Length: 169
Image (cartoon, rainbow, N blue to C red):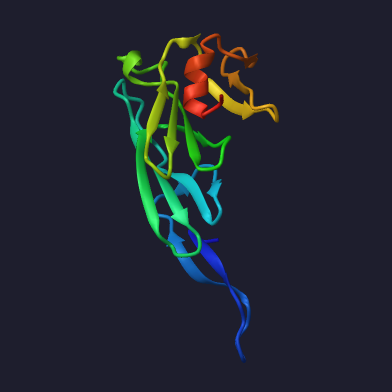
């Protein structure tokens, strides 16, 4: 809707209902996935087209938007795909390992608790040389990864590290 987030406005006497109140204007050409985080909050990464292929780690920001008040918080993160498998936590599936010089500095997964700001990382190499395509949490609480390259479901051996990132006991 023309690069803006709108809030539904309840109609009053002689006024129409509808999406009339602009809550947030997107500052870049596009955004990635819009992820519900908590009640009334969504997260997304604003993207620019034509990002150069550099051997340096590319950084971006996650925008956390309160759709009721329009309040915005920003979380810096490496370029990647944004997702969430648990309320109040954001996951960045970091990308670009194929061109980055110092692969050990770029995690394959970054977890951010939106309340506390705590950041946990799954380091490069902990799942072999593959990048993550998606993360799922089963109804039983088990974390399953889908990898890029061989496109398979993968449950890592280092269960303690995964459980600490996702808060699974």
